[in-house]
Image 1 (cartoon, rainbow, N blue to C red):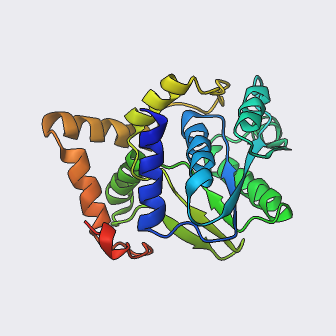
Image 2 (cartoon, rainbow, N blue to C red; image 1 turned 180 degrees about the horizontal axis):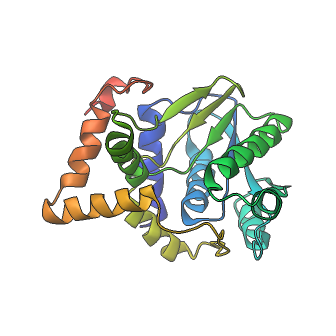
Image 3 (tube, rainbow, N blue to C red; image 1 turned 180 degrees about the vertical axis):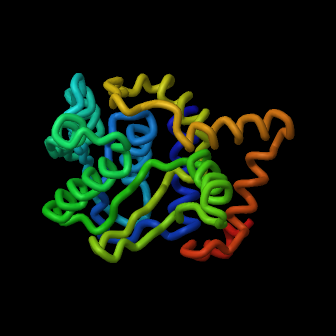
Length: 245
């Protein structure tokens, strides 16, 4: 995927759900994966021509995973003229060596989010951008349906009461395959260090299910996504009239 197409997807999401306002200072959470680095490119590019003025900064919460390095991310941020901050933590040490958690993912997510929110507040940001894409939205929808018995997926725009931040997801119209293509096209500096808890998860199951459904019923994935957009799901903002599907 070329940068121009990524910017087109991003502009569509931002305009459809009014994600950005004049004067916003947006934190971009950078995990080091392909999705967050693509989001960084997208917002840095949009910033150049979008009619509403906004700032972006990039933040990485360093969990302390062995082998996790941020030098190449910092270099990319300098090239894109985006201030970059690394919040060093001992989350990995606490979870695996101190507490010896057998199911670490939930606690890790909470601690990582807490560290990120605290850093964002000190930097004066009012919004936080996450790199969830179309596949993430569909997979979450199926996980909620299958494992929780409810019709739900995360919203394009969410106000977080506890932190006072507004969470936005500008990559919501991008397919994961296209983001992989963009990673290869731009040679993104993806960090390869992995957590020892990585493995087969409910999300991996949902990802495989979506792939199987779309293989057996071509176009199924897009139909599910369209149903989500038109489903009036709880917590979803109303789309601008010109973008309704």
